[in-house]
Amino acid sequence: MEPPWKVDPDYFADGSWVLGKGDYIKEWRQWFVALPEGQKADYRELHPPIAHNDTFYDVFGVPPYDPVREAEKYRDDEGFLTPPWLAFPHIGLGSIGWRMGAGEDYWHVFADWYNGLDAAGKIAMRDKYPEPVEVIEGRPWTGFYDRLEKYK
Image 1 (cartoon, rainbow, N blue to C red):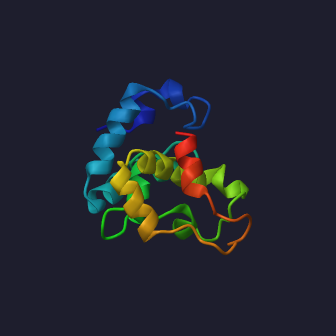
Image 2: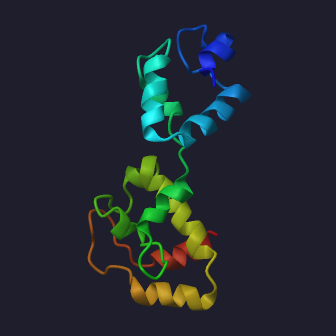
């Protein structure tokens, strides 16, 4: 496949890939991501990007960011998502880290997942991962599960 800047040069006319939003770039991304690593390296060498050095491949040469897929690495052996205070112990309750970046993404995925559990699943989750009584960086986590259910 031809690189996107050759197929849709208007999207890259500003010397950037920021405007690269055409249908072709989506198709190209799916194709490129599926290539074996050696073929990706060969392709990159044959087709150096016209702007931003190699950041084009760093952004579009990988699958699109998917918070739900990313959260999968926080599942325990029983299939539960670990609660936020264990997944991101360095982010205290009340921190801006829960309102931006990976913390925010995880918070939303966790809340949707937790609120999708049936009553027995929620009880099992609360039993396995009780809210910490001690304050871990910030405010206490007491009442966390109840607040999640209140705002679903």
